[in-house]
Length: 379
Image (cartoon, rainbow, N blue to C red):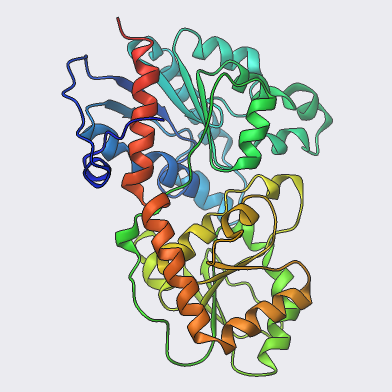
């Protein structure tokens, strides 16, 4: 078990970090996106200040810029010149890898390039790979046969070359072990608990909250029929927080464009949070972050029993699992009719988020892990 090293977590756990006599470890952090990319923001950018406080020197170089994501969310094609620039900058950074004690990489360093190229550009520096979801499925199930042939097993082979692989859920932990990873650490996607107001839900109506990207918005039609049926027995509002409204026929909706600084406040304005997903290979590798956010906000959650969702909610007292449309109607009806049950579930979730998912707690584990890897490189 790694010893805690971040001051906030150390104080809570009765442990004092030792004085660092070793040279400050140098980390080359290579997230996929800037702060507008949820996985990059939560699993990389938000950890950087804790790493620096712990004595690391960190160079953060995302692959894609914010414009790339903005175009993706708007359904616009990528600019070829911009893509060429992204690759040129990443190659330039990787040529300087010898000046670092480890490379901390989100998923892969060179998207859509074969393993031989990436392995050559990462050679000579310990590699820590991070996966929040089943990214390998994008190659393995790609519509192009050429992509499947060239890249279908790229990430498994990259995992086998890594010093450590960190994953956001148990399904990905099993995948990384089967791929031959030397060490796999389950590291949940954290929340900054202080950013989630802890207050009672609204006194009127029944507000069902959903937060996510356009990629996960495609799952919302799974709730169309249950929400319409529920609306026939009383007022229901679907509160969506993302890039665009859901526009479910016959369902009242309140849409809020996603803003990082408003996430917690928006979730405080709902009664329950939902996370519908189909039982498919990519979705089984998701890390259930909407559930973790609901816990932080002190709200019960109803989710599909897929992958990490089942792990997070099994015997937790924090929410309900629903598979069929009738399951969803029953779960949401139960929570609407039982405010005290909602309150208990919300309090249980908030307590669990404080112990397991708060940013300082997760960052502390990451600090210890990266320090161990860096020491293998330092003289």
